[in-house]
Structure formats: structure tokens, C-alpha cells
Amino acid sequence: MDTLGTAMRRHTGVIAGIQWTTVLFYLVLLVLPFFWLPAFGDAHVHDKMDWWVRFVFWGLWWPLVMISMMLMGRVWCGVFCPEGTLTEAVSHYGLGLGIPPWMKWRGWPFVLFAATAVYGELIGVHMHAETTALLLGGSTVLAVWVGFLYGRGKRVWCRYLCPVNGVFTVLARLSPLYFHVDEEAWVNAPRGIRSSRRTPVNCAPLIDIRRMTGASQCHVCGRCSGQRNAVRLAARSPNREVLSLGVAEISRWDGVMLVYGLLGLSVGVFQWSVSPWLVDMKGRMAGWLTMHGWFLLFKTMPSWLLMRYPPVIGGVTWFDGLSIVLYIGGTALVLGSWVTLWLWIAEKSLERPGEMWRLAYSLVPLAGIGIVLGSGSLTLTLLGGQAADGLPWISWVRGGLLAVGVSWSIWLAARMIVAEEQVARWRKILAVCAVVAGSSAAVFSWILMFYLW
Ligand code: SF4
Image (cartoon, rainbow, N blue to C red):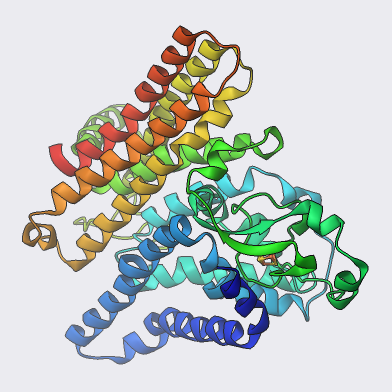
């Protein structure tokens, strides 16, 4: 494995080639809807190209990136991501300003992920090539702008403001591939080795390499491989990072991202368009609003805020937008609070203050597999409403993956709980039961979507 790490450090030109090829491919796909699509008078060709752009981005690219996070860590960020490549390249020639303190707020990954996911649903990001370009292109422009303002050859955008950074941070903790740092070897490296490798490594995502203990922040770019004979690409058990988390590595914001973001908000995002509960809620809300004279909410919404999805006769209104936001927000709040409550009960059972946030990491497999299932259903939607009918085994695959996700999470939680010292056995059993109860809501929400609705 180390040979691959060494090759990555040696052949930076190859990595740069991959990065700029991806940038080119990405930009062509982004530009297509605005400049090329209108040029086709033939509606059939136009629709075909529109579909291709959406399928490549949301049916292939996005699910594969998610899967890669759990299998290979953040290789996507370090070797392929076009936004990362652009923001870093621009920052070499930008103003090089210092990073403002507000940008370092640890809540940004969750807030930006939630805002982008909800806005994406409002504009029907998967349903129109133009809205795909609007959302991704807007994010790319901001990445370039941040690169121009801050850092010198660094990826300030990726570290602090990328809307999916928080998702990648938690999913990469399961990666069996990572850059291992031997801090003792780093500190005690003989003078000869230090001077031969004196050129400082440009770690673009601003990581303190010497103290790096896991895969969550590392972009696996390979630039530090072999540094001071202390850094090497290595394989490990996918459970290792979660089971060995030190107190300093536990972040409440990671917990919020897992519980309210991946187990809550994501479910709402994938679910709202097929939910009979939303239809019921809209019926009740419409009656109440009409009775109380809230007619302004039935005015048409600007298309850059809400697109026609699903198609609605007479345009889409502020009421439609509000319903989607309430449904997704409500799902995040209810599911997230349910899981949080049971994690808190587990913490109380163990009598270990702060334990709930450590236990939250045990839910990474369930959250990650949930995201893969949701993205997979999007792929099938893009292939056509009946695509799943031609795959009778898909229900079994979904059920199997869900079972793997929840069993893996409960097993991780049980390992963490059993390792607690000086805790009565009955308390440990109670804590495991609490995690099972917490996970059940996430499982039930996927069962609703795939089997009951
Ligand atoms: S620690 Fe930094 S330089 Fe080293 S592989 Fe990770 S991202 Fe690259």
C-alpha cells in the first residue's frame, strides 16, 4: 500500500493531469445547459442531452463519490474534485488574505449542507440540467472566489465552507485506506532525513500532518507520503477510527451532522416527493390558510427559487415551497431529535457525561448506507419511473444493505459500550437497547419509502 502512496508523491504530474481533466469534463457538463442546449431546435435531442447531464451528475457521479468516501477515504477531494483543484490553483495568484475567524465556525458544514440540500430540492436540482448547473456552478464560483481571497496555495473553501465537507468528514471515518502518521518517528526523524525532505509539504486542506490521527480531514493527495519516514499510506479495519476516537477528536458538530443531517434531513430530501404524508399535510394547510386569509402564499414563486417539480398546473406557489421546506425540516427535526433522545438515554445509563456524542459515531455505517440507498433510488428515478420494476431483486438488495447498516452500527455501539470500565452490566445492556431504539427510526423511515408507500 505504501508503494502507492510513494507513487502519488512522486508522480504529481499524473495527479495534476487527472485533476485538470476532471475540471474540463465538469465545466463542459456545466456549460452545456446554458450554451449548447438552446442551440438544439430539436426538442428530442435537447431532452436527451438534458437527461445525460443530470444522469452523469446525480445518477452516477454523486452516488459513486459517496461510496468512495467509505471505501477509499477522501481520494475524491484530493485527486479528482474540480472545485478543490480550481480553488487551490486560484489561491496561488489571489490576494492571500488571512482566514477570517467567522469562517472557522465549526457549525458551517452542517448549516451549509442543510441550506444547499433544501435549496437544491426547491429548484428541482435533479430534474433540470439548468438547475444542476445553477447549484453546482454557483458553488464553484464561490469556491474560486474564496480561493482568490484567502490562503496561498491552500484549499480554504474545502476546509471550511464546502457544503459537503461535513458529510465527507464523517463518512471517511470508515475508510479502510488512510495516511498513517507515526508522530514519534516524525519528531525523532534523524537530521539527514529531515534535511533531505526539508521542502515543506503543501497540505492544501491545512492539516497539522504530524498530529493527524485519522481519515476524516485528509484529502489523500499523497503529497506528504514518506515525509520524515513517518507518513505512509496504510490499510486498517473500517471500524478502527470510530472505536479508537480520543476525547479531543469527538466533535458535537459531527454528531449533529450525523443525527440531524444524514439520518434526518437527508431522509426528508429523498422522501418528500413520494410521501403521501406531504400530500395530506398540504391539504390540511391549504384549508387552514384559505380560512385565515393567507392568500399571498398562493402567488407564484420565482423560478430561481422553486422550479416545476413535480409539474403543477398553473405554476408553483410560495405555499408549495413552504410545504417542501416544512416537510424536510420537520423530518430532520423529528428523526434527529428521536435519535438524539436515545443517545442521551444511553449516556445517562452509562453515567458518562458527553458519551452520547462519542456513541453518535457508531451510526456512521447506518447513515452512510442510507445515503447510498437514497442516491441509488435517485439513479433509478433518472433511469425512468419503471426502472425498479425491471429489477425484481432490488428490494432484496435494499433490505440487505439496510440490515448491514443497522447491524454494523449497533455492533459498533455495543463494542464502545462494552469497553466502558466500571459500569454495571445492566447499565451497558440498557445503553445498547437505547442505541437500538434510536436507530429504529432511521430504519423505519427507509422501510416506509421503499416498501410501504
Ligand atoms: S495530510 Fe495533507 S498532504 Fe498529506 S495526504 Fe492528507 S491532504 Fe495530502
